[in-house]
Length: 339
Image 1: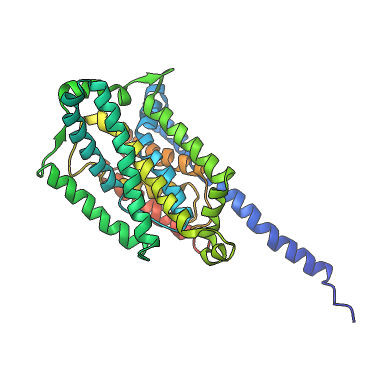
Image 2 (image 1 turned 180 degrees about the horizontal axis):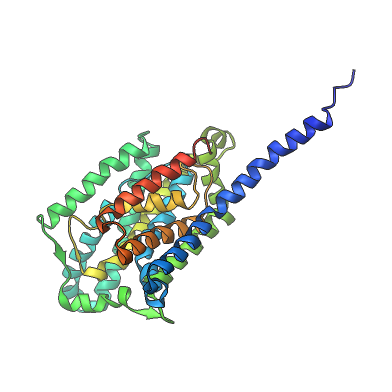
């Protein structure tokens, strides 16, 4: 006997069940954009200074550091991992770069060359730290949470040791040479914003247009199936943490000239802000799906929240981190069961 065909009613129910997730995903994708638009409207109503060009550039410049790190964090979370150490990593890299530039200035005889070498060192150190994380997670078979929780303490402890509990400061002549990296602008847009844009574009192209990006998403969706499909899971994971480390290095070399120093409080809670930006941007906390565009919007959205709080004094500025923590919890709650 031929198999029984489903009735028209059953077909309609099945069609609606298949269509529902697509509409849900579309709405979820537009969520961060809608939230950002509403926040900007609220900020403009609460304080007229919010809508000025100077304030917009200030928000984007402050977003750049966390945004660059968040782009790398997006890859890690999509792959099903996490990195709790990025703030401490940035602090240690900043301290090492400052010590290196101070030492190399008299040796090479050129402040500009010393700063350039320091910038290269920042990226290399970030890649090395990311490589260490990747190897410990893949070859050592240790959970990412445990590995990065351990290095969180290690990185900040070593910075505190190098600074002898105080601060490491750039020499004045070298600081003047390095300052334009943060304070200069191109076509009216600060340099950190341009770098953030370039990193985001590169990250988006890698995630959406390369085999590596597809592998990252496949591993986050189902690692075992990815292994069956002959994906080099360990290699992809290592590269993901290396990429995050490079992003931390780039963010740090942009951040150092802002204050010209590094202390045990440098980069404090950056990991919270980076993870919040990724999650608010629509990336699934369980891995498997996400976008760099959403992450960028999430980072800007969080900066706008902080900016509005600073301009309006609705609540104390000391509660900014609490607001970000609540945001992570709420978004994670809304993502229950999503993969």
